[in-house]
Image (cartoon, rainbow over all chains, first blue to last red; front, side, top):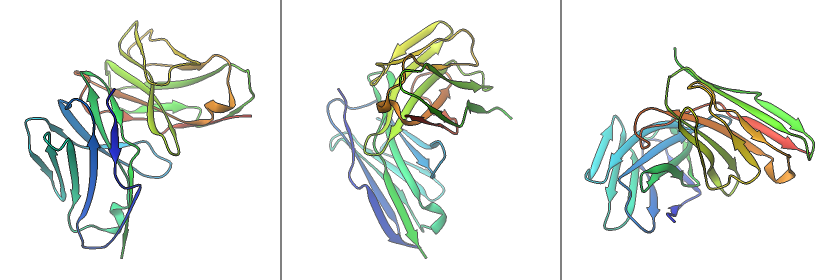
Length: 111
Length: 113
């Protein structure tokens, strides 16, 4: 079965820097990969979706890359702000069925 | 505005009792999902449905059941609650293809004593 690893449980950076979060998967390459944000006590909120034939996708200060050779997605937040502090989850499909989620990386941005 | 709601938000029950968690969405989405979230495990899929009368088992379905009698609701039932089922439960919905973005509810914190 597909396995997902988000390399860091926690990431601490200073305001204004770029945060880079990693999502690695095993086995087959998914057709698409999603990133979600989760704040304490709340449900996850969708941020971005990237398909296997897309190398990069951007949305405002967010950028996602998808490298099917490395079996890895990178999630970047540029010019990070304390308000970006949250847990970020990656999720991918299982051969066309429901998504599976990584355990998440908790980002803390200090001012 | 369309939304997805869960009730109750908090529940304390005893071992062996039957518990039902409600999930209601007004997005008119065909797809609905139940997850549990525990420290060290992340979000794990319990059951999901791609339409009325359709239900499927997820990664951690033992001890749980769902039924889908209409588009808006997917109640999750714990047949005989166990302490190992103490967790935060999230319901989600999505439209169209299974890979589309999911909209999550606020969660239900369940404690089984």
